[in-house]
Length: 153
Image 1 (cartoon, helix red, strand yellow):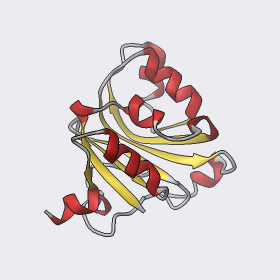
Image 2 (cartoon, helix red, strand yellow):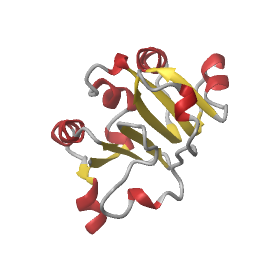
Image 3 (cartoon, helix red, strand yellow):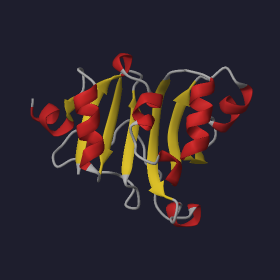
Image 4 (tube, helix red, strand yellow):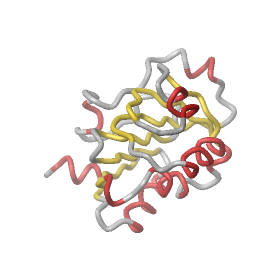
């Protein structure tokens, strides 16, 4: 498990999702959402209790309109895992989850491979069972910091 923390003004969710290899082979559960897209369809979709969406569709939507996420947890699942299985567990949340800020860091949803978190409109946290994702983000983005090292400071 590896994670990183990035200043929101130094990256975008599009860039992070683009760094996930074969992103179209995943589904996402988006929870704890606060964002303000101008597009009416997206606004409605992201104002629900949760959103279940294919990775490819999410990328298309986010490329259509660039907007800031204040809060949101993007839990990434392989396509073999169904929504029914995912909903057997509590929704992941951003504000108040202590697992981001203590070591070892943890992913909230036990079936997720990765969680990407828009945190308070200022940070993006990425925690993944696939360490190469966090390593890629740490190499690509000068403001990215290893989350466990960040927690020790």
